[in-house]
Length: 268
Image (cartoon, rainbow, N blue to C red):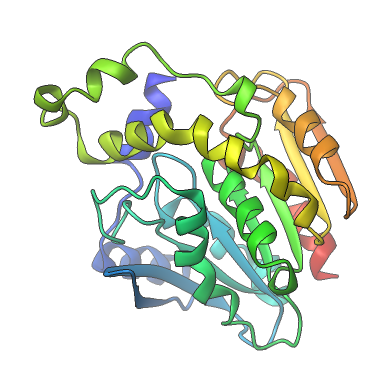
């Protein structure tokens, strides 16, 4: 679990030059965009055909838009979709280090991306871990603007939310300065997550978009019970469950095919 957080912190924050080099090597055209909201500049990456249905990828904690680079270069998806991967507030190059604990506020800050579709169809939102919770919140708050959800290893059930022992001392004023920035942001989000999930409890009924939940039975960060919770909570839209017995939490890297196939179902 510690390796997961360190990997997310140090392996997935690329500047614009590194992004350009990556896509040049893949021979894929990528544009880098920004918009300003709530005094934040939000950075996002775009690939694919802008006339095709829009897929928006939302990363977990820690992480950045780079978590989905391999999806953004996928030849099959490039032919079917317009894809956006965004740096969530506080991560990557979207106000790095400035934590936004409120899921409602994060959803509002990502809302402008929903309006970038040019295909005459509502966007598909794909989120991993904490990002899965945020795409659910977007579908709750803006049900008329979301077409489908793909949630991979989402952390949604407040009863199952784990607070690690190191989280509390890492939040002490003096120790905060010793914690890497992205881990501090992750910890601040983590400490507020149960309260945020509880505030979402009466809102699950607002979701009108069909959803696919993908979860690994060996997930030790967001237990598989989160998938059952979501299936019970979403009462006004169809929910498909994909439970992988041998997989853990790192689904976008360990089993990207499951996520890709779920997205394709909503593209076809």
